[in-house]
Image (cartoon, rainbow over all chains, first blue to last red; front, side):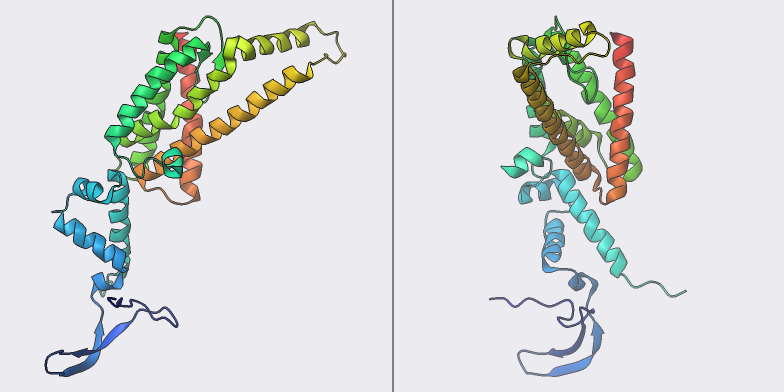
Length: 94
Length: 196
């Protein structure tokens, strides 16, 4: 089973950060505090949707055919993900 | 099956919806004429004699066009990405349940019984209570209940179509949708008054 990358704390639901990265070959470990990339902060199903959309050359019609859904349903899903990502984007400092 | 009956707009693209909607509108306009039904308003159904296929088809075409245009106007204000074709397919499909109500007027039963009831009210002495036939009242009450259920189904389908077309969420959208349906009904009554 492929383990699912958690995107929020199972205890308090806050956004998780990356504190350790390791090399599977030589076991070198890097410690620090890194923010998860924006696309990893959304649920896996939405990440897959974005990947499929990219692989369909950005064609909503093609996506609708693949998913067996109507065109406006797929467009609405994309719009919802766009809204979610806009909210997750760090606000520019004034 | 539940999705097909209550929200086909999520699954089916506009082409099959429109083709099925047009075919159903034409066929059920014929049955509507056979049962002497007039759809003389976006939310209206009346029985009158004589009714021809051209009458019911024109009624339905006007209602579909009005619903599509008024909902599209609202949809464009709420979400600029909406397409007219999605409101057109929603209006075509949502009205289908309504087209089955004329079947109740088998052998002009509803029309004749309603006429009798009106006559009873008109001929009764002032202050007296008209005598009603229990079976007659029961069937008319059943027709009224079924009509309300099918009207609710029609409005529910239309809202699902609107929701998918505009990505509508929340109570404000429900209120705006309701107001738009009332506006469409008023406009349809004016148009039917002018052409009939």
